[in-house]
Amino acid sequence: MHYTIITEAHERGGFTARCIEVPGARGHGSSQNEAVARIKEEIEQVRKAQNAELHSLIASMHSEIIKIEVADSA
Image 1 (spheres, rainbow, N blue to C red):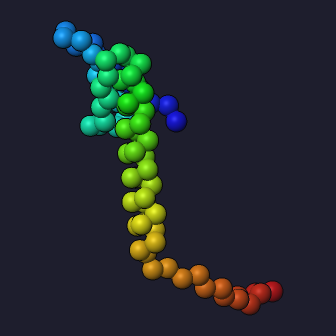
Image 2 (image 1 turned 90 degrees about the vertical axis):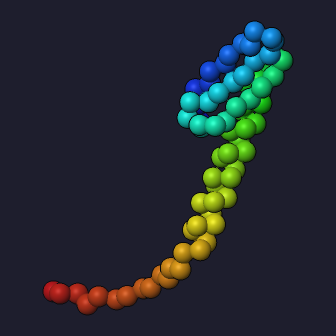
């Protein structure tokens, strides 16, 4: 997947990276590359948590597969 990252340089040094598609995800670093590397890690963690939540939801659903036979109408 592709994500839109905005990096900001701080007056006192360092960078912050934000992700438009993942609100609240931020990466900080002393260089722009470091901030981007950290936001990638943050996005991966968010995606893992979302996948775990989805799998948990699916597992909690009670469903059953039933096969039936329908007579031919001809």
